[in-house]
Length: 462
Image (cartoon, rainbow, N blue to C red; front, side, top):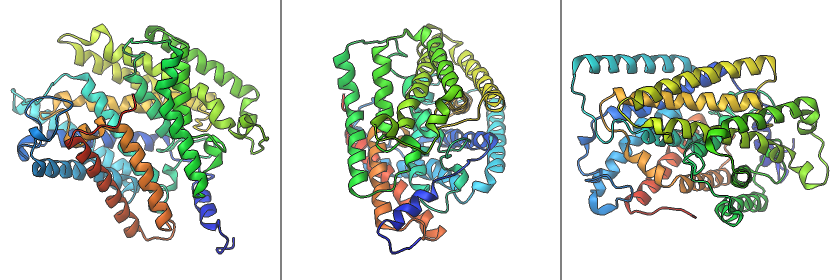
């Protein structure tokens, strides 16, 4: 390829993330074991290290009047060093040590829990020791951190190609991204809380920000000639359109949360049947017609898979988090047991489907992909629920900041990622430079979102 061609850099970057086969399910399992343990480690560190960083009383909208700015920034930086930096290292320079780091962290965590339980009968917990929602919040933050680290790291050679999105079949860390977003939203959705609405006008209004963001992304990537892998969603489709479509479908076809799991399973089985009886040949073919559906066939048809995933998440959220059984002295023990059992069952189901039905495919969002997303995300939650056995806070400053501005975090991460790609040739820089850029990028992102939280700013459309 002639390097002097105007689009040579764009083509090279597109090829860099194309035709990949991913890694093994075991490595994905190991990676997603280490991440929640980092959260547990941070929670176990005494919160009195920086007096004045936390509000004097629990208040989701606490502003600077309750907190000392210097202590807040110091605690935010500690959170960044304990949570974000190790994750970045696991995805890059320590990628070949994933199994060893997972085993070591898990063993050390279990030994720490055993020592604390046997050595101190009066464990000191701060906040609510049995808050199921705090686990879900930490889980959603993990999904966000993985996302904003990977979307930039994938453009550097320091990021292993096996972690990047697969072309057709296979499993990888980045493949879990959009599925995890859909599931994370469904677990705490209005449907999961049994607050349903079939008002078409309200549905369109609530989904309009996602559609607008989808069009903005389309316009900006086209205008700056930004690299886009067409095989991922299609020519014009993107992640925001998928989220908007799932939201509209779920609101229009109103399924009670207790039945949404069964209905979602029927949707997934029906979609899988269509895939195996001709639809796969159409979706995975490189040929495209001139009509809008053919141009965006992957994105449009995968909606059925993501919709089925969302419905499963609604049922799980209602069953595990918002159901009546989650109150009472046995709540956490029983919910923890349910999550662990479901995690094991979904992993076993994923292995069986991948071997005997069809290999996992994020591109089509087939049934094995959906079960893998559910299994992996339940695994994150199940490890986070070990926090009941670890003394300390149930959240951190960084988690609280991200939680109040998840949408702003994602949008800012996309903007910064675009600026980095337009400013430097990510394929030619050294590993040291790549790691330095990633550290600066993630710290700027964390600090900006932290300042927004400190001053009580929240980006919310509805």
